[in-house]
Amino acid sequence: MSEPASVLVVAHQTAATPGLLEAVRERAQRNPAKFHLVVPRMPHGMHKVVDPEETGEDDAQLVLSEVLPKLSEAAGTEVTGALGDAEPLSAIQDAVNLGHYDEIIISTLPKRISRWLKLDLVSKTKGLGLPVTHVEAVDSPVGASQ
Image (tube, rainbow, N blue to C red):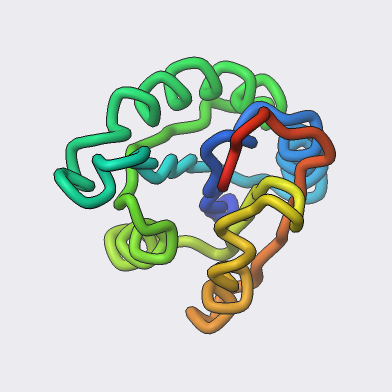
């Protein structure tokens, strides 16, 4: 029997959206898989300039603790998680360099407000040589920029 596929999930404000939960559920049903969620820290306002590494950690930790049970239920197995770098591509590169992943799922806000899509995160992540699935949220919080 082969080892389950290792799937890296990257999300912040969209980590508990129905689209991402469904993508994880569908992926888990296709073949055995284990999932690891990385939540990039998201500094806000002046903190981006003053102290980008520290700011956003509380928000990211809250997302992680609230979302892991929901993702675990969708996956049918325990999903692990960690905080990532404030820059989402760096967070992904760090995770890929430190662990073995077979594929990546990136969840973003809708195109018109997604900072991650403006940064071309999905295409840049594909450059790492792993299959990438992009899940775009339908609804989003006011003032969101993921």
